[in-house]
Length: 373
Image 1 (tube, rainbow, N blue to C red):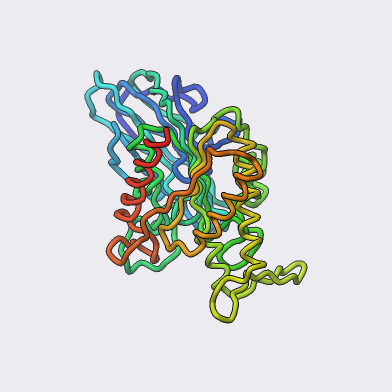
Image 2 (image 1 turned 60 degrees about the horizontal axis):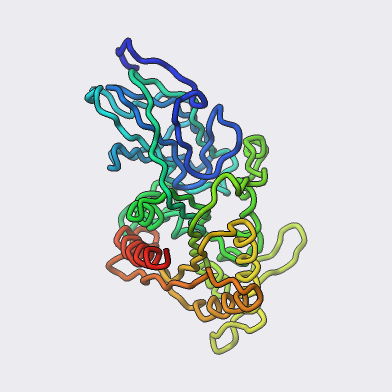
């Protein structure tokens, strides 16, 4: 611990002007972060600053990134348990430091024991208001939006939290470029209709109206993940949906059998390799239904379906679905944006988009959002 006698310990719920980013529950002592890109942010005037964090997991450990005055300065794996982490010390006490501590990995639906809680801070100075940003963006997606493989060597194949990044990520890059506040709802392997392996439970729309309903287990339930999300508390100007890659994967993958009911699910291909019409229609219907749900909860937002970072074979189906939705709703604040495909040069770890692919996507998306707004 620190030898600084001036440090004062304050419960996280009592820190003046502390800003919480990302969907969370009403429980503020401690503050739990669920989704990737979620964060706590404050402006500290002092020489030294510590945070008390509690990390738990059975398989997949949480990671955090620390940003000071807009620049990432460290990234670390958190060990199990409750501990004090020094964010900075020995800095000029007269200067205000903007600190963001970001959850670097997605909500881990495969590990019911995974959680990240903030209990308290210790500082030798004062806390000042954090600037309110006028533009708000919500990103919805799969492993691309979770930043899987965005960090790490191309040779990395292990599915572990280390290769996820909230910062080497088109969501963070786009928000920074537009000076926007942002939130992410994403899950690796999931789609609009099903996950890549045809499991119908692996669809984002089903859980969209909950705080973080795709997390399992009693501990998460007690944290409030199944509670309805209060949409009035945070209304985005723009909603970016980057889904479809895993729905395409379902057409290429073996059937999935429900272990409880024995029912078999499969998005089929025709003998010539084209999509089976009936199954493609199911995907298109799922897109339409999700757009209806998004509009109900985000009445003023412009919705952008952004797709193509890992191929764009379902793009014609997405166009048909958006067209069908617009015809029935007369809602014209919905558009489609094709993102640059990932190449051999821009590939990251786990055959996912790398940092440079995310950068290219962010540039295209930033330019597009600036034009529509």
